[in-house]
Length: 430
Image (tube, rainbow, N blue to C red; front, side, top):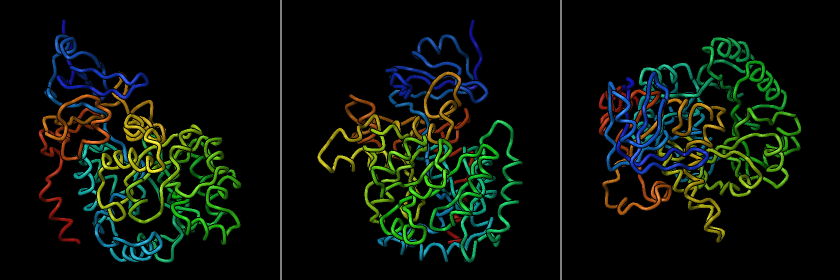
């Protein structure tokens, strides 16, 4: 007797990224109502299931959907406008441009392009900090893509949404209260240099009232650290720790300039880090002490940052950079291929507090996955799938992308977005 499922992905090598690092040489994944209901040998699952839709992954690699743990999706609008500058010069260009250009229409158009780019790269979800998050959510929802976002707090003279800081608290409270049951809300407190200690404390209290994930920039470069120290007498992570704000509900973006004591504080609090190696290198910020964070037991995910500072939303590119850059000190094992892949999948999910739902191909989890075409010269021959994914695979190798059991790209054709129209809309705005 066979069971009916909505989707059966079969015939490829399945990289489950479970705790046992299970790899199925000829595996399959069965999906019903957006949930993975079976993972195992292809011959067994194909014999047991009839499927409304199938993906033949023969000659391919089936992987959990990649998770972007720090980005600003709508910055695709400004891609290429702030290159070869420091972080502070970058902010000096981008923040005024955002005040002039951003509104719900431009954000929605820019996010649609970001979603198209992400789906093509096998990226199935992102933690997105930006203005007009409601427009971003609608654009992502229409495309069937998974977005983690929410209200943003950033005390700047001309906020793009025209809402001064003193009005943001009740607006954010209404937003968080309206979140659907069963979904974890998110609140973004931009940084220790755009919010005062009192404002940070207020933001964190609101987030914790609703059980929200809290995301902020911290210690992105030495100049930021110095400016916060001058203003408040403490470095960014020291300041957060002294205020009692660090905790397991906190994701710190970048965390490049850290002391040993700060690493210990992050680990002790159970906070996570979103590592953005490409953006950090491009802005000359330095290299985050990821091996030391991992040794301390800190959960580290991978992010691209926005498409202004990294120019692409290619999480596979971040995987490769993370697996390479930490070897510069002479230790080729500092961040290995499997560790880098896990940072882009299950560790990213754990950082976002959704490790029981996303990040690996296991029964009971949501069906977010990608299929890479391995019939490529640079992926031949095939030995270690983790090494292949970390050191050789490219975003263009992704053939199929599935989010919550829905096929968003089949045979390199987007199914939920009119790609030509999406690109034309943003080009016209830019």
